[in-house]
Image (tube, rainbow, N blue to C red; front, side):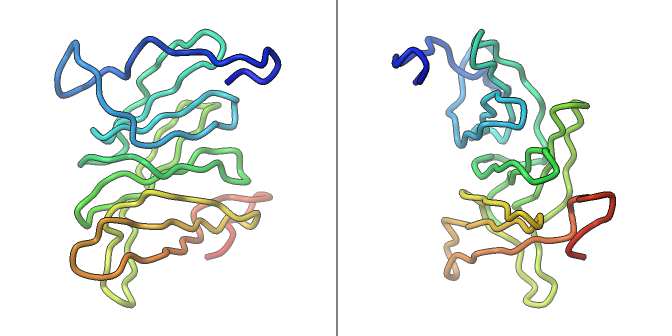
Length: 161
């Protein structure tokens, strides 16, 4: 939807599949990035950037092994954060739109309970840089709400360690 024009714009393209050249892949999550672009995660675990004015689709990478990339949010440091992976192998990633750097920050794991996030579907980030993620589809326990801190540099110092 384009609010200035009060019109819907229909995109007549799909996201290219890595596993099947020439085919498209299902979108799994979306987020407006710090640069105003639309960032799309896929069921293959890949990340794409879509320019909202030209509809140019750019493949950015696959932040971690495995499939599914749904939960994403922009942090107070101006970077895009997200989670990819499923079946007990969820990882946190960061994308810097300015430099183009895509980094896997590692598994979402709590050593106190010995659990790793199963699969993340939703994410939000507080002003202090704390990331909250909601996992889903855990077959052997209730899904958890995860709190992640210590991965953002705010005001020149690493916060929430």
